[in-house]
Length: 68
Length: 467
Image 1 (tube, rainbow over the protein chains, first blue to last red):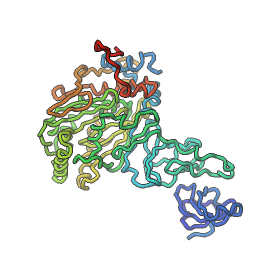
Image 2: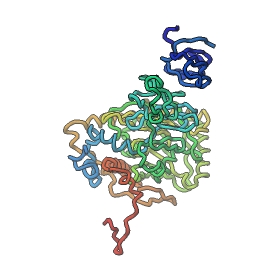
Image 3: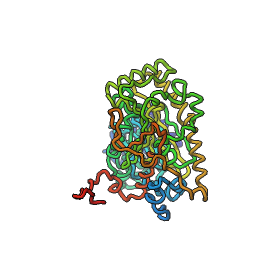
């Protein structure tokens, strides 16, 4: 697992894992250090969110899986 | 009411029968607090210019009274003005001056808002709020009304205030002197460069009254005239066009707006100006020619300082600028100054004007420094226990106002004082305070919008029902 993640460094295309076990791909980064816009790639709890975009809160991101 | 022990506002602290105004209205902190409620929440206030937010996501942090506000453009390119305060715990959602952002994020708990004001991001929404917070109820607070008038953005918190053009009334003609292109086409201005912002240790009404039409303080600027900062190298502006004109002051008693104007004689072309630059001089010569062609007799009119109630000052020409006197306590004003140019003017013209404007106005401008020094010490000398017992005199020119003023074939709307021979009058200043006192006492816009009330019916003996 990564240490504290600097959100401002997450570029579009980066895949991340979330605190609820989901994975997502960063679509855009407003560079406020609080949110990224990401598209769900997988979700163990709610498969209906896969493919949808959402604002992901900094403290819900637990690991960087892949960088572009 | 803070004024109740002094006979009220309209018949006590501001006494238009004698032309006297109490110093209390400038230095009394209780009156200041009432002003924030009775004036700045109800009037139309200048917020910024559309050229400052050209693209979706652009924002400019402005001020309305003491409130910080966001002037921004959303994804659909609509313009909004929001209170810069998170709905959760009040933290400012933007602490920069201007920029571009897809969301405004509160740094305290992370609530985030789109540029249309909607709450779009709530940390732990599913976990901590169990998905139950109704985000649609917690968007940024938006102004009640907004108006984009020829690029200038105005807003009010009061849903019952008249629409902006009605609020202006016939003063619109004079505002257009600042906002229309100098060749007479409608609109076509842009903001030049950045906004100058600075603090003066005085009440906001000192600068507001000065720009309403203080025609008496030329002695203060004598040294600036001697230095010759003007665009033709003499005086502080090109005066020839004024010296051949009628100089008049105009006010609108029911609205509280006032200005000075110069009216050139019929068939008199505007003298050449901006002689320090052949390119600029030719530009304005051409503009003046086009202006007369497009505007006809109205092309004879040029503006001088004016004020839209309560705190937006206009200076249509030499320099061309809009200022807002933001209240920052009874004893401090934060001035924001925008400089305007014709959008289509050549770069050399814009650059020449930029240099002239900042020689003249702003914290580094010679003329403005004279004014600020006066306001600073006038305010300081009025705060004392003894000083505040003695009213100021605003009697100059009382009783010499004219309705239906016309000269050389042109009739000007408003109540007019021709000061060509008189040199000065305090007619416009009285108008500002008369309107200020009305705002301080009126309970609603029903009282303030006197022009909406039908004229009283005349009795058969010629008297009205109200007599």
